Structure formats: structure tokens, C-alpha cells
Image (tube, rainbow, N blue to C red; front, side, top):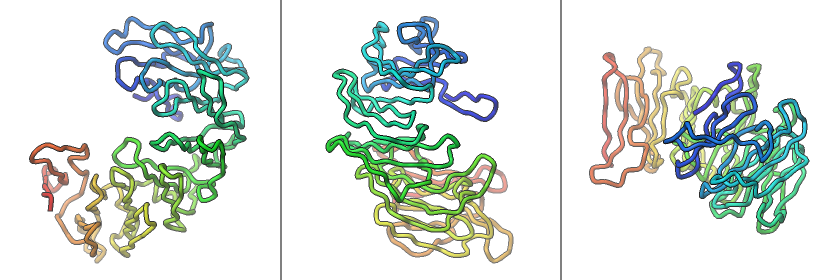
Length: 363
């Protein structure tokens, strides 16, 4: 659930505990309440043990027993602190002071007490139960983004300058206690995968500035398990990327369609280009299947006849895209994994009557 402020800034309005039994909602300017979704009338206001204004989005620990958030002394205050409190009774169990209201915090996956805190030109990983700092490094002023490896060893920390245009990404090794800049990701932003969740692979490409300026830069694949970057393409338009692209569920296979179609393997760095696949960008109707074995491209006939068609591509078997069906491709059905008998994936498409549906079997 998201809220929009001034038709420009979008932020999470409700955050749920991992098991869904508790939720935290932003209720007014600087306010937040903790409540049971089944009894929303019985709520408790978050204030860090004293009256204050909550900044940013609160974060639940893995078990949902604790919640962490940034709280200011008042609505106009420039001083803030991160508070960790018990969800059950509101007992404050830890505080980190000396921060600004732009500070961001979240729990590391699988942790009840270890926090990632970003902002004020500093990135900190701290065990709030013991007070031990695992990482404390210099970064850019504002928190921009983050990621974690599944084994808990690595943290990806992104920060930006005050304009949000100069981006910096750092690899934090919690085992070695070291931090290093990832040069291949400098000035790039991340593009989420098509099927949600924490995919082990993701794309980084040029940001799209608020004023609509088009940036042409590199496209890079990134492995969050090893925190390594794999260059894929040069001279990529931010406009093309923001128009849409598609990935497999694990993010390993990505498809970008402009006038050409580019099929990319983020693990190996291999890129297949199929030139002149369409007379215009059609990425809104081009998809990679969840398992990454097939891709479908909704393309205008490049012969100039003006007809739209669906082209199918066997990712594993290779070959060129082949015509599948007339109509506009909309989505893959079966994006959620199904282990039951008869599980299959299909293509939903529109034809002249907007009712067409085709199913593709396992072969």
C-alpha cells in the first residue's frame, strides 16, 4: 500500500511484519501507529518513548518482535535518532543518536538486532543488542538503496548527493569488516525484476531525471550473492529502460526491446541482439517467462505492413524469434510457482475482441 504526497513523492504508507500479524501505518504528517490488521482500532502510536515525529518508513525485524524507525524531536527538528522497540509492549531496547531526519534504517535479513543505518554521509551496520559496530564507513549524504546476500555476509549500500543525481554504490563485507566502492555501478540506478521478491540478479542502468532529461549510459548485470557486476551493454537510453523491460523470476535472463531485441544473461554477460525486430519500442508487451526458458516479444511488423504480432524466442535452445500469434501480448500467466499437477504457464493476449487467450505447454 502506498501513499502519494503532492502527486510527486510516493512512500510506503503501511509496512507489515514478515508474518503479517502486525502492521505500521503512516497516519499524518510525522505520525505512525502500530496495530494488528484484524483489530485496527486498537493501535499504539510510535514515538520512541517520548513525543516526536517519525521520519521515513519503519522496519520490522525478521520475527516481527521488534520495530526500528527514525524519530525526530519535533516536526521541524533537524535532530533525530533511530529507535528499536518491542512490538509487544513498546519498550525501547536500543537507540542511535546524533542523526538527521533523512537517516534510513532497516534490519538485516534473519536478524533481530542488527541494523543497517544510512544517512548524513555515513553508512553503519550495528548490532543494537551489544552496541558493536560491524561496519562504519563514509558515504554520500542521502540513503538511496540497498541489498543483501542471502548468507548475510554482504550488504549493498547505495547513497547519493543532495540532488539525487550523483550515485555511489558500496560493497560491505560484514565478515571481513571492509567496504569498497563498486566502480561499475557508479552513477547507475537499479531496475527491479518483473516478478517481485528478492531476486539474486538485478539490472543497473542510467537514471531518469525528474526533468525528463535522457541519459545514455551503460547497462550492467549485478549478482547480489557475490556482489559482483557484469557489464552488458553500452549506449543504453534511460528512456528505453523506463519504457519497460522484462526479466525471469530470478533476474538471470533479461529482455530489452527497442527497435532491436536484446536478450541478456546476467550471469555470463552474454548478449544476443536481434536487429530490426520492430518499428517501435514495444517493451510494454514483451516478457520473459518466470523460469527464463522463453521470451515473447510484442512487435510491429518491421516490413512496414502495420500489423502487430507476437514473436516467441526459445532462450535455452537458441534461434531467432518466430511468429506465435496475432494480437497484443499482455502478460505471462502462472508467474507464481506451482508444483501441483497440471501446472503450466501461458500467454494472455488481446485480439480484435479483447478476449484471446493462448496456453503454452511445458514444451
